[in-house]
Image (cartoon, rainbow, N blue to C red; front, side, top):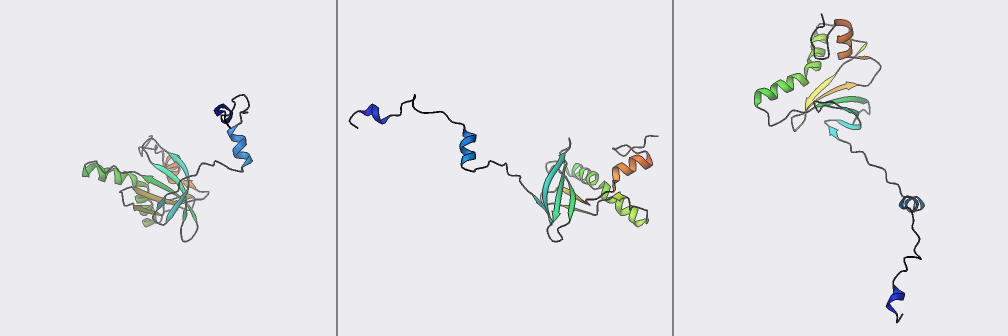
Length: 156
């Protein structure tokens, strides 16, 4: 111990090791944790897609019933002028308003997956709620049956 060099590790004696091997030996896993979000009575379980407009499609579970739904979250920029916010909100609610009209007209809608609820979050996002199922989404139904494009225009 009188020689200070004897206290330092000899770099030739230290063996290199793989970090993954050490973590595996310690039974340590580095799983990336998925962040869940809550919207009203729904807790997200999976982010399914984000479109170019910033709309997010989630798979979510209802906190009381445990049933699974799809939530489409439409951001509404709070820095927009009031008229633009209203326009953005109306666009986000379009599919839900169509469902309300279809049901008022007692239209046959059994084979369609329709939004059954819509609400606004505390920060002004519009959320539409559609049950998970085997039906045809409303947009696809409109395109197939009525020659509408995804933007809502007719193709004829």
